[in-house]
Length: 202
Image (cartoon, rainbow, N blue to C red):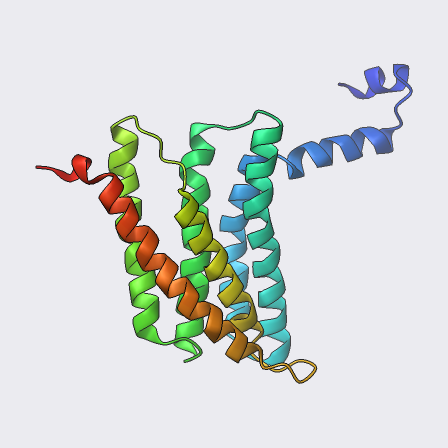
């Protein structure tokens, strides 16, 4: 709708602008790309592991993580599901989570061996998903994969805050969820390869 059409329909320029912004912000593919775009900001903030920067990094990561739910919600509600979304949505999740874990490991806030297992699983499953996509089969995330992502996000957010707030040991809370994330990461990865083992036959 143009500006002049909006006037004839008694819409103010502010209403037209607001509707266009809402359309842009609520588009699932743009939300997916926002997660990717937020990664450099999180990495840069974590280069300075003080209370202010880690707080801002945790907030930015939290906002990016929320878009993981919103893009799927808007895609289903508005019928905007696409091949781009099905492929890029889990890729954006993996990039966001992996970047955060690498930075946390660089500060010694997360054991490096855990990060290696988590990222190794993500790379392996990404390779498998490419094979699945070439076979024209559904590449949507499984329920175990969604639980895995949930545990990872639940671990990363308090680990990013790191410092105590109101006497709450957020590092300890993050470590509890981290073990849950490790279990779900391995479990969902094994499940993925078992379900699609027929595609791996030479």
